[in-house]
Length: 158
Image (tube, rainbow, N blue to C red; front, side, top):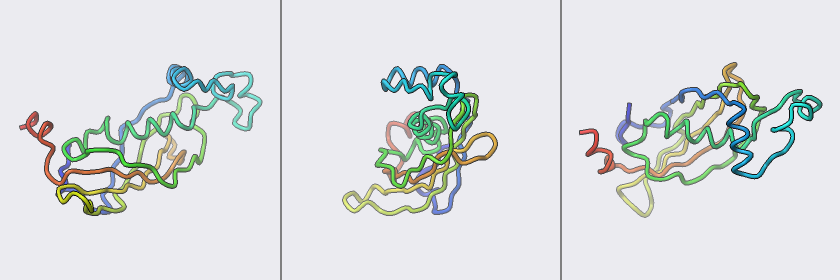
């Protein structure tokens, strides 16, 4: 379902589809970022760590959280203009290879844009969780919204 601005309200809750984090994800992220830390890439090293096994990069989890929230759901495709930022992001627990992650998010605030009357800013409280419901990451994300359906998207769904 795609929501328009008038459908949104403070307290509105969402849950993303799941995404299982695997070996290919971790190695591709290591290649893209250059972060080949052994905690992420070596079973032997990670076995002696406080986690006892390999974990995914924290930033990989944050990246997947963003994609799961808006790209995979399409819920805000007629309203979302731009991602504005993150505040108070915390890496609470490890993401293990094989974990299936989900994003639970709620609209914490919606306010009119100060510079453009046709736009608004929504702030979301976000939790990245695993299949056991354990919170792995949490924080706030802000998104610039259009108060009228985005023309290119609205024309394609009419």
